[in-house]
Length: 340
Image 1 (tube, rainbow, N blue to C red):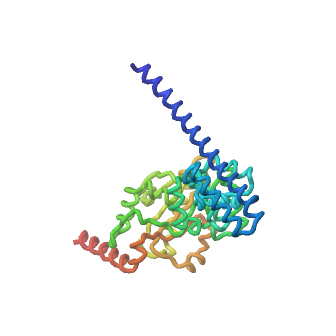
Image 2 (spheres, helix red, strand yellow):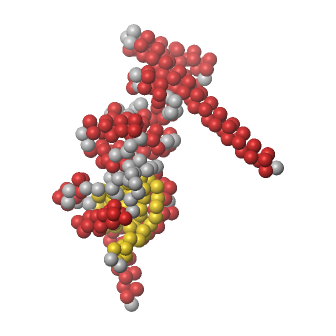
Image 3 (cartoon, rainbow, N blue to C red):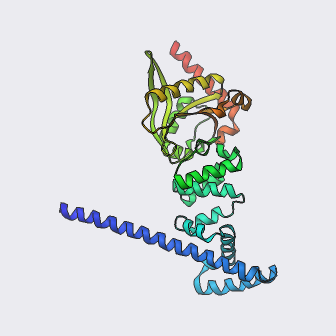
């Protein structure tokens, strides 16, 4: 019986792999077909006739195609195919992409107007294997605009995306965001830093997806000891592409200069005591309720390995002042209760 089970597992794996390859092949052929249809319509119908006449031809063409092959060839979808050809006009590059992305992925990507922004979402979709739903969520959540990379010169953006695409290396600017959107934590108005930490741990998978799939969770309240004094890192991650330990410190209050010193201490200790061969220097993220950009600038944090970012939830963003006041009151009440 055990031998039969082993053969069953082996053959099941073969079947699953074959089905997966077949699905990839079918998808690739379908998307390539749509690209070629778009090419014919663009180069032979739209460019060779007056716009209105060309559109009327497409309407008639769509009617016949739908009758023969189904709703996938509706008039709107034919224009989607034209758009696909216009945006991805390099056949060699497109042929590579269509083996990895579905038609639904392309329909999301090809309507992104800025070319570098579209390249960003293509690179991240491939790197993190996003589903269509995940891609849609990242676009709607303005992930590109929230990365450090989007604030850099165009040549830097292009170089970092090329490095990720060709060498599978992710820059710090590409990996870090500001702000981080934490709607899914569903925190109440009067939450404390510990509540925030607990919610993150409870929803760790979704939290890491907001950071990026390459973040691997190591631990919470990680203790480090310096001359018999104990310190605790709120959250510690490892980023596989950057090959860096990542310290995440949670601050319910506005960012303060002393937070930099605290995180610098953690990073220097980790650099001396907890790096493996091939690792790069650790990086720190301070997640805070608010930050003064001028203070961040004067502390030269952009030039250091410490990144200060706001965290937002929809409710928290709307009620931020009252939320901070309530949380501080609750913390003071708890402190008073413990002292008495």
